[in-house]
Image (cartoon, rainbow, N blue to C red; front, side, top):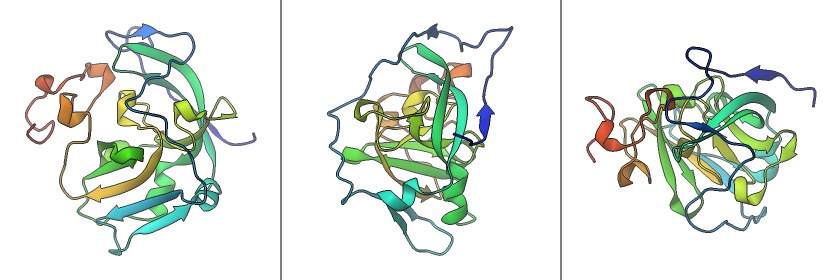
Length: 210
């Protein structure tokens, strides 16, 4: 597509798989609840919460998908223990959203909001990482509805549940707050290389009380 490609790989002792993961051929469909119906005339991407200017920022589908596009080659690690290696994701870098709708200086975390009120919390540093992407494409093709069309968040350094499908907005937060799965027993941070799957594994400072 003529867009820059960034390669992301991280492994130990020559392995590309985090501990406890298995290599997956293909891309299984995994999600909670039904697949939402996309209505472009109603779709809106919203950045709100502790923004630098105190205002919410919104894009309709046409404007959001017209933002600068890039591609990232990165792995996807599902907490259900499968890993898909070397996928090419295309979309809008999270850093672009941060530049267009900057957070206030005291922001430490973001809540990613998706259809049906689904949410996932991230440290601001993970959201702002170079490889974090609002993906619209995989391997040069538009995402299917089952895999998150029109937009899913890809956060390669964390387990895949931290990057929800069907994203609709970002809330800037000045204190951490658990998202949907984090309230239901999943680890607040979700680093696959540390095998941070469940909240009982959390140490001091890993997250707010369950």
